[in-house]
Length: 210
Image (cartoon, rainbow, N blue to C red; front, side, top):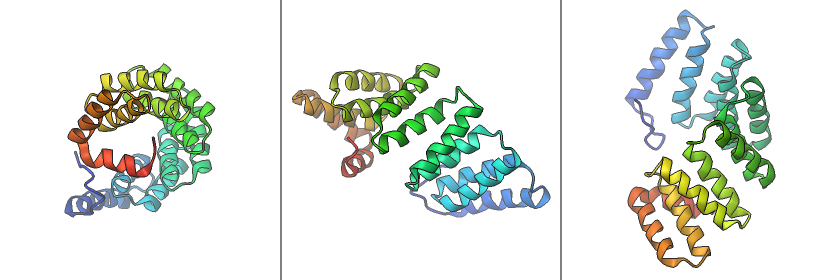
């Protein structure tokens, strides 16, 4: 498996891209090649190229729900929330039980401050996958934004149950415990978050997303 290391472009990435380019030279209508190559561009944070490959994949197969979802995620990363939502809408229309599309659309609505729609999407994501740690985590963040600390804690507990190594869940729970004046629990969770992934927890704090 190729891992993203701070978006660094090294020899492995170039070799992988070269292989995909060779295949494309032989068959420019192979939708799976475009779809696979855009995953590399995603790991490289090369958003323009990823959108271009998603566009080509969609053109070759307009019923590819995953390609719409992937492109929607790129638009979201670029701050184009409305285009992101339009793509998630298409993905969900094509695949009504597409958990990730509901989750990502919920994140986009949350970034727009539309918590009712965000919560509805998180509810759907959890309905279709009751062990999705990320969905519980995201819904907890939305609950916290609404000042609903107890349901936020309940969701974070489930997120940790299904993914006990997710530093951000401990960080968010620690912040919420602090708001509830449960300082011992808050300190324990923040310590755990930094132990698991100091950079992740620090970045979250600096972004002000809690």
